[in-house]
Image 1 (cartoon, rainbow, N blue to C red):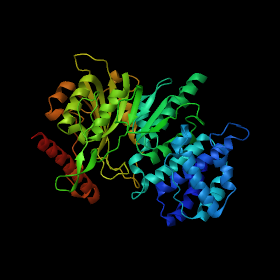
Image 2 (cartoon, one colour; image 1 turned 120 degrees about the vertical axis):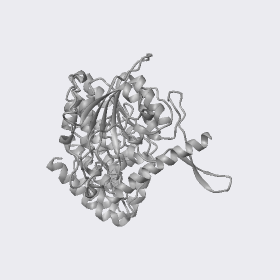
Image 3 (cartoon, rainbow, N blue to C red; image 1 turned 90 degrees about the vertical axis):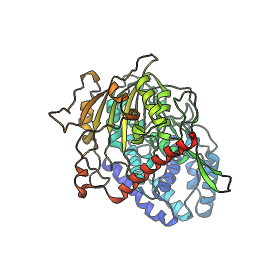
Length: 493
């Protein structure tokens, strides 16, 4: 992050501590900043040298906030949010279901006039604005109590994934669980280095990227993140690059050349019902779609099926999945066998623990290409890179860096995957990169892709065991997965 970006983050963040007295979490604070920043930038761009028509009606524009103070300002601001939440385009995306959470009129006035109004946001370089906003989002993710860590994928991992998937000018790129927009931004930056003419540049800005997010407040953060990086329409001339929707609800009409995503981890889809004894209990909700290979309440398995469905033929995908997607029986086995048959599942990156803001997450990145229909299976060989065994990362003392993924990127051989060479052999048992033939995978119990071969030193040294809270989280995850399978057996019986 540049020095200018750091100064802006420090300036904006310093006021958050004051607002925490009003009960605002870090996530609430960044959301409130977003609502005001959009109005400020829209007003700036309506003036020289831009002279662009503002998407915000004059009655609700930035000058209307500056003209009021005290209780009048607070009342007016609530009217502004309510009115703009009914708008279309980017305006509607940013203000949909927005509410003012700043309880003190004096603090709201200071935030508007004393902080945001002092900066010429539109005059700042996109890198400065974008980096500053990303800095705020990352600080929000670090707040374990009320943060948005579940929506924030580590940026070094995202950059490495984009570097090997290599989106190209003219391609359409989708993230069906986009969070705050990390994959979309990294894809934009990668393609921007390759664009050659005005048409490609326009396509990249307005049409190339599409994100879906189920939570209104997070869609708002994503839209603002893209806007501050110079992505998407300033007004209503085209469809916004992000939308609030349940990506799994139905098969969309659009198909994409590239899909990169980190779907939400955690609980199965469920709903609260009243049973015969009059007690509340949760029932699993299976997603039923004609394009899916199997119906299941496991969100991650459903997202893998969804990603395959929205890919164009020969489209490329990278999906972050928890370990249970690799070994779970029942629907999990069905999805893995069909995926190996109908797609070229060519690469698996085993990720280390300690890199996500949610504790105890064991995750992987699964890379596959969609292929046209045929009888013979498409997957011939799965290459696995183990970045987990004997690797120790933490969010504070040893955070993941992009350089930690350099060896994986080099082994991946994105320019020509036929040139791949293993670093593991009988003579080099510590090599982290090896291939498995498809026949070997399909013959494994439940077609498990939970593949590992390195000697785990932590299992031999008790002092190297993870922290108790991490171990506890892993045990809970394992028990929930086991309980889910028992429930499925009970239902079948």
